[in-house]
Image 1 (cartoon, one colour):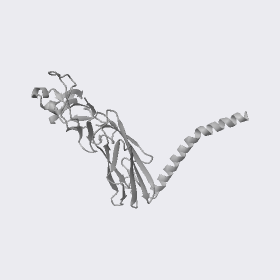
Image 2: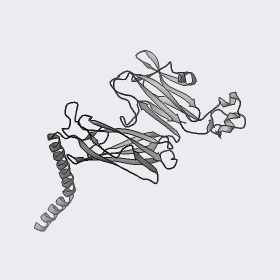
Image 3: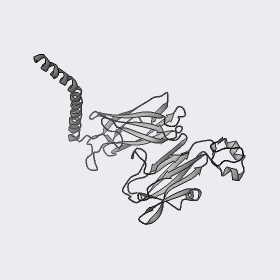
Image 4: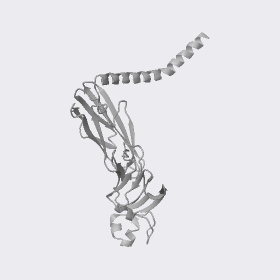
Length: 300
């Protein structure tokens, strides 16, 4: 019986040891951060955090460069800031057989008076990627003086629709957001069959240019559909894109509002669509700020 009790205790210790180590690291890290903040040392970021964080980005077209902006700062809030300049270094980690990762700077000093340093991480694909393929890049920032602290972020970027990128640009207080879609495809697709061409047939640019105006109208490089809730955002109906779009409406408070638009795009072009926000205090920026876009996107 005594041996059995000892065995049970040993098993419990083995099972609880990893949890204890993890908890110990958590407590140690929080005590360390508390002591640094007690000495008015703040080394933070709008995207990087102590212990790391992972962001999912699903709007990549698989061919163009990706630019991610972030900042390092020396404040906890609008009142509490560090008492001394902070020296730091930056590193990136990525699979260089798939992508190249470049930072506009790899070290610096956040001056007490300046409070913020801004950076751009540029991810350059080595090859073209297919739908649903992903790449991963990690940025790590480490302060060296007056205290040592490390913060990091990992960006997992997935191809949503090959050759087509989109983003939402917004800010707190702005009455509207801008949805931008960029088509990097260099082919046209038959949408409505004509002649010897069936729906879905791909045409080169030369083949497309040789078509009549009537047949060109039956083709598109890509067809974009944006769907949204008119109780949250309202599309700018003065936009030129409305004239070339098919739309669907949804009733909200007794009024029919556009809730979906579908429009064709030519090769190598960008299109901006403005949406007015019912609540200007919300920032709908996508990706990074929000994990899910307020405007649903599909490309076919």
